Image (cartoon, rainbow, N blue to C red; front, side, top):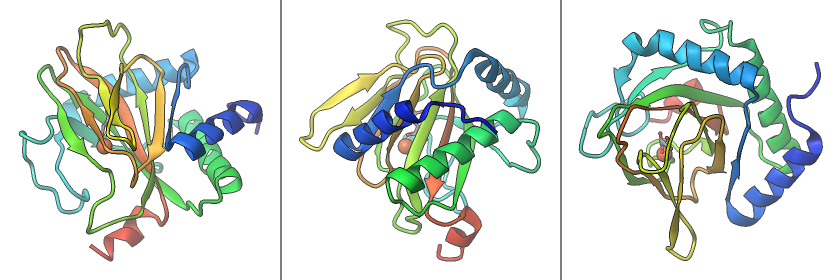
Length: 209
Ligand SMILES: O=C(O)CCC(=O)C(=O)O
Ligand SMILES: [Fe+2]
């Protein structure tokens, strides 16, 4: 199986992660995979559920903190997304090989922020469960324009912050325990594929909740 991205590209992204704790990668998905994921998402929209706060095993729904709807992906049930699962395997392998992490699994959901939706500043690790090592967000918005809102706000170590527009096929990777972030209010429906590379598979993590 050939790699989806060149090793040279991966290595420069890993350099960014090591030095800044995050990296923003444009055109992470090529057109074929982008279209596949977007059409899968649109087909699943009727099945999206209001997202909770905290580990997904102990959901509390609080629209004041976050306003998105999600659909958790499952590698067995959603086996048709083979190209995407292969890309995740490649990503995991690269992190283990070049960032010396011992990642052994991942969990991903599709997310829909309806117009007006946002997510307050937070970290992706929870007290009850700290096995999320790397956050990985891929945006699936075809014609996002300046002024449509919904930017990801990333907070740097010195407390300053900057905005990332949720542009089609853009990927953001960051260290889950280190990088506080927020989603600003979206002015129209905002779609993404969001997940976490895990130190232990999710089902194992749940034992400690
Ligand atoms: O969609 C985004 O840009 C970030 C989402 C997020 O922070 C989360 O789901 O934890
Ligand atoms: Fe987050």
